[in-house]
Length: 457
Ligand SMILES: Cc1cc2nc3c(=O)[nH]c(=O)nc-3n(C[C@H](O)[C@H](O)[C@H](O)COP(=O)(O)OP(=O)(O)OC[C@H]3O[C@@H](n4cnc5c(N)ncnc54)[C@H](O)[C@@H]3O)c2cc1C
Image (cartoon, rainbow, N blue to C red; front, side):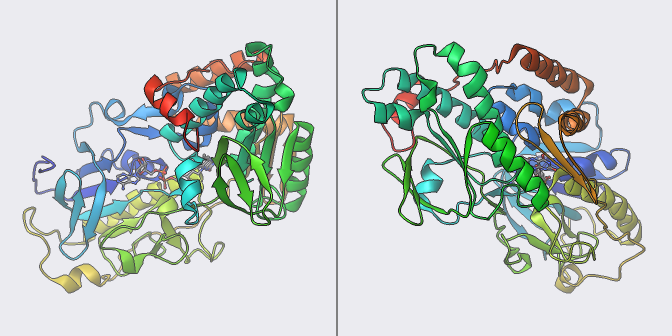
């Protein structure tokens, strides 16, 4: 099946992935003569930093997901196709997708990352990841469903395992969802379930390293730990989860915790792309790129955002942190560099693939491109209402002011005025009403019934 993109004489830039990196690139290329083709497996851009708020019933899906076709209304040079990438032929300059093949003049991979279950099959099958909208809805559905089951549980042991939540990974995402669920336990569930003994609900936050928020400074980790304790979250450090069996999380030392709500925020990896195996580094199969985000060994192939691993930035010799700001900056800079490149590089005829293999595989001399340097804009993490932590170089602060900063930054980066207003209003409502109002279980009843009896219901 063809992708149905018209052939033209103007260079075609194919972008796979409309996340932070891909979108920043496309927006910066809006007023250029190039033909832009966006391929994404979803029909929307998602604002991942607020996924946990969908998972914890604070926000609607529509508050953090934005349809591409609406975004690109009126764009003359952009074609969107909803498809999965299946492989790349960098020599023939062709991309294979589930809709068919497409020729490119420049290809940009911005496919991000997926959760890493470290090969533990039972966990992959039963744990709830938090990497996309479906994951966030699955968490919301499962936690709420297990509350309903707990109401009629036949035994105390069953009730406890339905109410317990175990979160593996105490990075920013783990800490954020733990904080949000502790709020649900404190303010919302006692009102919704007045006859359920909420003290049976324990929230465990498990971390393999020696501190929470390991990407931040030890001082922030200590303060965050204190806040988590105050919120009644049971933090277990230096612990490794190795299995999930008979509704129990199993640790390396054999200890177990009963739970039907296992949330996995421990680690990410990149999906390998057929055709690019030799460009994939060892660490999570990120694609090795040079200082211009060009995939090493290929002229017209670029990777930006989480999927790219760059060693050329002296401040980040082991690669950049996988953050939205890095992805956006790389997308914006690549737009500039692509313009320079396309002005300097002779284009093949629209219908012909490059027949000179060495031209495609050997990087040509680089015209005056700008090297990527990441300017650290600071790191933020929140632990429920009124509490967040901010670090920027030597500046560190936590508490209410950091929480306000966190809220403002997230509102600022959301797309569109309408999106910003909706989220802002939602937060004000939730804050003063102590509410998490989107407590809706969406999905088929039959499927839920099936899952109730399963391992990971
Ligand atoms: C729960 C969570 C919370 C986070 N919180 C923060 C935060 O607070 N601050 C921060 O800076 N960063 C945060 N991050 C990290 C940040 O979201 C990523 O660094 C950022 O999304 C990377 O952007 P990207 O464009 O590289 O990838 P993504 O934003 O992941 O976009 C990838 C796109 O590619 C598409 N895609 C993937 N595979 C394929 C395929 N095979 N075929 C077609 N399309 C495909 C996807 O549908 C998606 O649209 C968080 C991440 C998560 C998961």
